[in-house]
Every structure is written in C-alpha cells, then in structure tokens.
Length: 222
Image: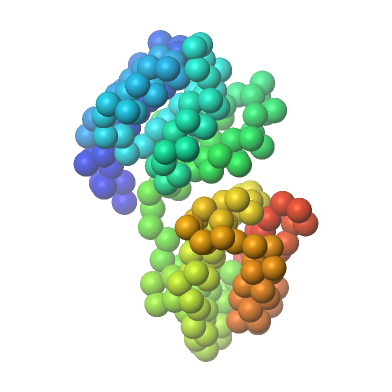
C-alpha cells in the first residue's frame, strides 16, 4: 500500500543531526527522494525550489521553528501532507498545530514502526468505514449500508465522512471541514448545521457527535 511513495519526494526537517540521519535512512526505503535540512529557513527555501510531495518536520528548531514553517507553507498549499515530530515538552503547541491541518503527529523518540504507521495513516486509501457489525459506509459507491439496505450519500457527505474517519482519534475542527469539504465555498454555521442534520437522518443511529464550539467526531460501536 506504500508503493506509491516510490514516486514521491519528502522534505525532512530536523536540527538534531543524529535523529535526522536515522530518519533519512528509514525514509529512503519508502521515497524516491529525501531532501534533508536542519532548520525551518532551509526547509522553506527547499520547498520553494523543489517539488515536495510530503513534509516531516520537528517543532523546536533555530531560525524558523516548525510552527512558523507550517504556517508559511499552509498559506500556499493546504493539501500537502505534513507530519510533525513532537515531544512531551511540545504539548502546548498541539492545538495550534491541529488548526494548521496537520496530517499526523509522531511522538519522540522516533522509530521505524511509528514512521510506518504515520505513512500508512496518510496514504492508505479509505474504501469502507465500519461503524458496527451491520452498519458501514462504502465511500466508493457513496452508500450507507445498514443490514443490507443502501442509502445514497452526496459527494460532500462522502468528503465529510472520510475526513471524520481520517481524524478519528481527534475532533475534526470547523476550519478543517471548511478547507476539505466546502473548499472554495463559504461554510456558514447555519449551512453546516443543516448539512449535519440531513446527514444524520441517513443513519439508523447516532454516529456523528458534536463537540460544542469545536467540531465533530465519529461514534463507533465496534
């Protein structure tokens, strides 16, 4: 499932040379090209000069730190996958990073399994979302299946459900929904509430939980 990475270039940003070298050695197994830099300024320069498909970056770095780097890149590209390396001392940054549409966090110390899990989470195509033993969502056919009965969903509903599943360990923020589901359209709160109300009626049980003032997440029963 990770064979598609063989045609991609990843930018690896880490100021600790020992950590960076170990990380690059592992990344070379997956990616066609690995560009390594030691701080955010070098990273942004490399991003502008080269065709980068994926970014993996530390937070605490000289010149430009990881958060400022991500802010600069997100102003230009909201879709490029970004993996953040973080430590317990960085927890105060996590909420800000979530708002910047980070695809995955890896808690230090880094190992090959954590890295593989992150890449699988980002690059594995999602076909089916299982809610319980008889209720699941087929994203390819755009149907909710419950006890063999199919209910059609719209493309916007498909995008929303896929986004919730990819963020299943966290709450999906309103801004993330705007960027990934509404995209270039304006998402008003009333439009979102109406959208959720219509979508909920297509399920035989409550599967979309609202976290007031924050966003939404899935309710699983398996």
